[in-house]
Image: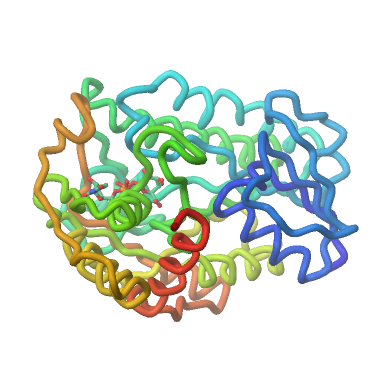
Length: 340
Ligand code: UGA
């Protein structure tokens, strides 16, 4: 793939994995981020541009064949504590990037979120449905005072802007909705390379390493469908190889076969951890209320299963990796980075 790719948010979890894939496929990559701690690969085809997307040189967008936009504040603990920063990072800073892509007719592959589906899976006939579908699901957010939905709303507004730019201003775009991607290098360890509360996987790993109980918010019966990062990157590679088929499309990328409760995730992770650290004390869990864990304004989705028929049809892709099989590698990465 001899193509010039501009990756915004290249130093993050998904960005760092995708840049490695792009380089392996022979792309020329311009990588933009505030820090590149997770992107350790070095390659003459890779240029690192340190800085904010706010200061992005428009010439970079113009000369790129495709722009991958990944920058986001995507940590639920921030949605009700730093909502203005969440709106700024997930909408205001990226709207000009989308506009610029429209002006120069640069293909924008924007990474949105499964959170746009909101609190529950609702069909267009107003009946519940199992899986969330790009064309057949409503987007159901909570009331304004439940600031949890600030993120989903900002992401949805950007999707709507990109869609409108596509329909009315000729922007070539593809919107990807990732569903709970997990893998090595996800999030951070509080107090070491980040502050605050990361997403559930990193919360549990931290607790295991510190010999503390794993917090099950409201009991841990809520469910998520986790997709392993390798499967996710395979889907994105296939999108990039199919500009015509994917133009103007919104595509879920997730793994419905890895639908587990958070309590089950805790159990699977504790098992993988015990295998990696045989002398460690047995893992414990404790139930905490959402308000104690996140503060006022939090809300949740009880179950989130992707409908991936469209990805299958457009990309000839289906995810392959089972969550339980991927956890030992994720635990090993965490222990090597942060362990004793
Ligand atoms: C996440 C984020 O909003 C986004 O990063 C993203 O778009 C999307 O989902 C994703 O990862 O693709 P959520 O799934 O709620 O939202 O994020 P987590 O923080 O991983 O929480 C999952 C569930 O675990 C929630 O129900 C939460 O209450 C629970 N949880 C979290 C615990 O039970 N214990 C913890 O220590 C942390």
